[in-house]
Length: 281
Ligand SMILES: Cc1cc2nc3c(=O)[nH]c(=O)nc-3n(C[C@H](O)[C@H](O)[C@H](O)COP(=O)(O)O)c2cc1C
Image 1 (cartoon, rainbow, N blue to C red):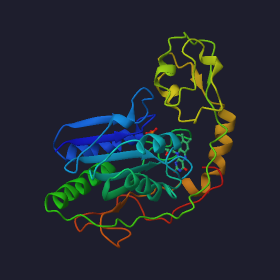
Image 2 (cartoon, rainbow, N blue to C red):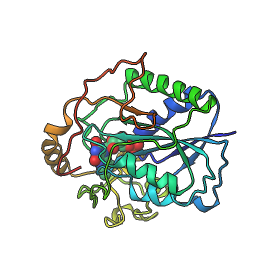
Image 3 (cartoon, protein in one colour):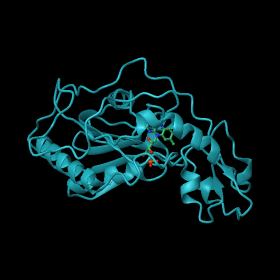
Image 4 (cartoon, rainbow, N blue to C red):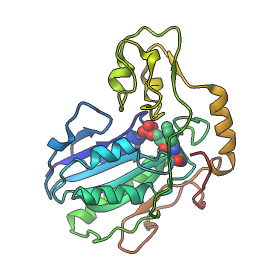
């Protein structure tokens, strides 16, 4: 039996949440990086004994299309999946439901799910500093309970998750990173761009049609040479104010026919709120 972290985390927020799960399983995990365009995902074949934490951010209330495309290529052969969706305090809409559908089609057995909050990777004023230590402690408690359930063979035949189909429409956001004059053409952003939108030798020629605005190139640039239009970002952030400003709590799902499972030893660190909806993302 192997533990896998199957992850799409352009700027690291999703990874923080996934790691708290992986650690709670107390066994070293193998990483399958869904941002890596060079991996042949068709070659990945798992077994029924394997346990996988599958973690993606919510982009526009959906699974990022490129992550979905790569997940669909994996042959799971009944491997168990714990679904982890991370969002920037607006809403995750249909992301969990979509992820479940993708994973089931790839042959995963969906055991449990979580929707957690991390700092918004475009509008950093939302969910700043999250996941915080309370979030991570809660997540780790939940992960330990799920590990125990798996050991005892208590696996739901159908994990009931929020969301509806047809899924929320998402056509990307108009905020695209650009290159500043101090760029050294080192090529790191091109090598790490999940969708190969940046040419290796000329980052200023970024293909905005391919770009998914994931913000990875900004986060990893050693010379801080990539940025987004701050005015556009501020306008978008203001539009989201009503739905994203109050801290949301983590949602946990682990039982057949049960929407939110509150564990007895578990207390929410952030107030309950209805899922928000905003016109942008
Ligand atoms: C293009 C894009 C779209 C996003 N859409 C949403 C959204 O619909 N709802 C939300 O709450 N957060 C949204 N976010 C915020 C991310 O889900 C959140 O910041 C997440 O932690 C990013 O994952 P990462 O740090 O692993 O890259 C979006 C971020 C990006 C870059």
